[in-house]
Image (cartoon, rainbow, N blue to C red):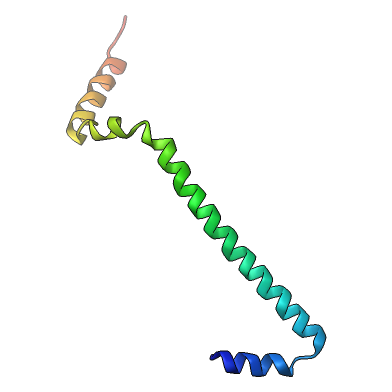
Length: 82
């Protein structure tokens, strides 16, 4: 739908409905701007939250090493202590 078609339909509406359209457009703009701000804040929060663990993740164990450690732990738990 082109801008001209939207304006033509808007001009056909009674004054009360034109006000509702104006309010709805304002709401949509506010919602769009709010979501952009939230997305920017969310990204910056994630960067600061996980930046302290970055070195840990870079030097993390491989999947095989993790499986080996888990198997050792399971063996200790299943071992009879009596």
